[in-house]
Length: 487
Ligand code: C2O
Ligand code: CU
Image 1 (cartoon, rainbow, N blue to C red):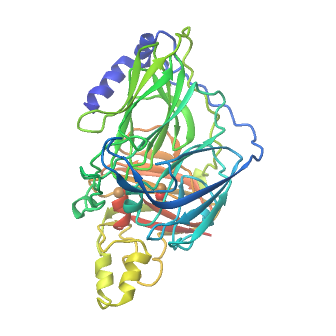
Image 2: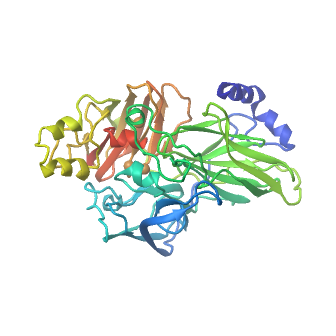
Image 3: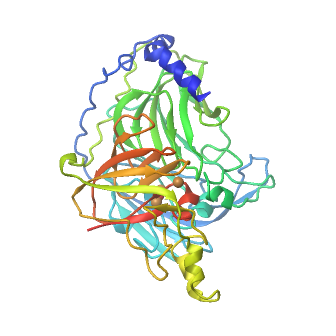
């Protein structure tokens, strides 16, 4: 099915789609897309004071008439969408009313290390009854999200996640701007949670949800302006599932990856592991017609949303998806970059072994397992080291020691038969090359390593202790996590 669609699209070419839409498209000729215009300087904006009370709340995840589920959320909104402008400052107070410690990690944002939200590494854990103030001005516009960074499968699995949109990348506004946040729920039929982790899942591709959902609920219909340009911000916020997004029924272009503007290219499909985002611009069809966002990675294509064109017909006009300013990001000096290699593999040792070296009633055994946010076993490793597998009373050594301001090229190698979306905190890297999946060169904060794939990324090192891990939550919790020390 996946192949069929790609072959079909290749055969058609963008021109085929264009004539169906009845207007010309700047995507019709490969290489014809002009470079994006640079973004003008942005003045300082306003401050946003947010209060996030992490707590248990009731929600109906199995439909309005279904049973109630106890979710864990930051606010009364399930998966809130926060929008600010580039130049604005976020002042978010996290108050913890849960029975376990938590924190907020601002995924993909280049921020000061102390605001990165990793318990034990960048801040003390926020225990029950405590609070923590995050204050920073995001330097880049785009589509981001936030989530906790300890007991991730349990906390995110119960709903702790939110979308963060930083506006200000638009040279021209889209006619509609919609969030498509994909995330499954792992629920029994009576609305209670199933185990978020299973040994079978954790040691392989991960444990899948039982209820597929978009923006927290079952996929729905949305109205979009007929003939208008619709910006879809697609986020894969699932703990486990890889999706491959395509648009059926309209011409579409990719305009940003992980929030970073790219020279638009025609979308056939885009494969996304957990934590990855893509912004699309879709030319809505004529009144009464609709288009769908589809996951082609599932065994059967699965619809994430149906978008019905409403309102008066518009005269045909050129589809020009270059609505964004060019991303303004530090670019590695490839000629002088230092090279480092990272191999993502199955574990050789295990935390269970490390804990077993202590007497079973030694309280340190629990501190070890709880304090370093690991489970009682390790299945995965980066450069043969499993997160916290060797160190009992302190953080494990970093995976790499880097120099602030220096350029680096990382070679990422997947020695497993599974997908691993690899994420580096606090940086936006350039994906230079990949051995298996063809992708244009682009900026990202998370890149999907296909089974046995080799990928090169480059970046300029920013000061701090930055986590570097797979974003399949059970993979990071069972060892495929580490950090870089940059000073
Ligand atoms: Cu969303 Cu450590 O990451
Ligand atoms: Cu992984």
